Image 1: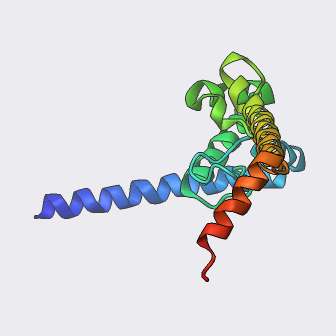
Image 2: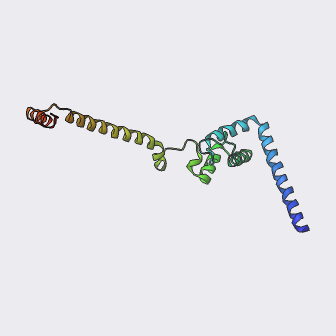
Image 3: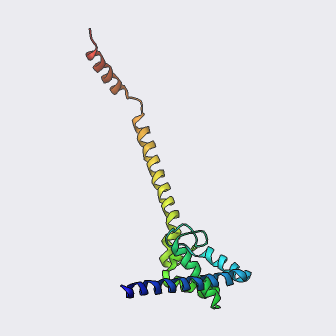
Length: 160
């Protein structure tokens, strides 16, 4: 029992120390306006993998906070913006970029909405043409023979 309590206490102390180091790193970077500006710029280029429609700068998800912390650490370590973005892309794929590059695998992502809209307009145009043709074909006046047969049928079925 004493060992378990000692272990729990040691884990608590270690996690508190890790948080203190992270807080010190964040405070040091916050004191440096150039590093903070770089962090903001990079955070606006990276997508939150949980929220998916927000950047990590806008998201409050735990993963977004972890990614911001990771970016801060890399800035502190002296990595360039390109190295940081390349690291994130290597780790999470192009999806982590808020504006993914146009290449073969992302072509559907970029061109898909336009292609679907054009397909929809094409289908709508064909439908309207067929409908107009059908309405015009059904709306022709009766021939003299058809009119006389219709009159005969109506006279037969009228009550006397």
